[in-house]
Every structure is written in C-alpha cells, then in structure tokens.
Amino acid sequence: MVIEKATIEDITELCGLLDILFSQEIEFKPDADAQERGLRAIISNPDVGVILVARHNKQLIGMVNMLFTVSTALGGRVALLEDMVVLPSQRGSGVGAQLLNAAISTAQEHHCQRITLLTDNDNETAHRFYERHGFTRSPMLPFRRKL
Image (tube, rainbow, N blue to C red; front, top):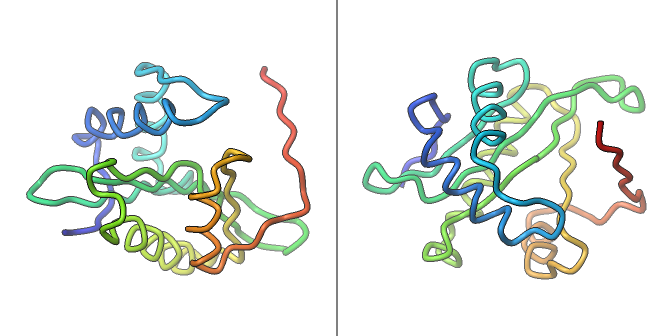
C-alpha cells in the first residue's frame, strides 16, 4: 500500500469513496457533480488543502481530505479533517490508521497547530478510532446554515 497526494486523475475513484461515506452519514447525500467540483477545487489549489489517498495495486482503497484555515484563538494555521473513508472491504486492516497518521504528519508539515473533525453523533466506531489516535471530544457544538 502507498499513501500519496491525490491528482485530478483520481477524481472518479474519489467520488466513489465519497459516495460510500455520504451514504453512511445522516446529514449528507452523494452528489457526484458537487463532489467533483469540491475535489477539483482542493486538488488544484494546495493552499486550500490536501487530499491523501491510499492505493493498493493502483486502486484507491481510502482517502482523507484536510482543509486549511487560520485560528485566531491559536494565532496560526489549523486543519479541518473534512472527509475520511476506507473501502468497507479494507476496514480493520490498518489503512485508516495509516491514512490518519499521514494526515497528521501532513498537517504538521503545513505548520498546523490543530486538527478538527466532525463525525455523526451516533458513530461510536469512528469516535473510538479517533480517540485511539489522540483526538478528544470537544465541548463545542457545531451549527450550520446553508447559503
């Protein structure tokens, strides 16, 4: 398995992974056009963020997407871990752990002081996974407004 940055040529497979993720999440539904626009915007502009992929025999088996912003509370750059998904057939094999560790290293290389992520409230499997990797639950509650 190899972990590397995604390219424009990966977008079709990345959309397939996002379909899996968004089919599991309560708040989101797969939308290939929106996903492609978002992926293209990130891959084409490294200042926006980075998408890392796990490949096995040239097939994408997982991805993690981080977006960059600035925290006034910390006075510096931070990352938002926006999407992380591993093919169901590969779960439990360490792919997710390797992707997350690569994301953490990448955030550190980009001088990020914190990584924030959101999971569904009832996704205890994801909660345990992130806690095993040093993430803690925040007392902050997210609010959204669609524009």
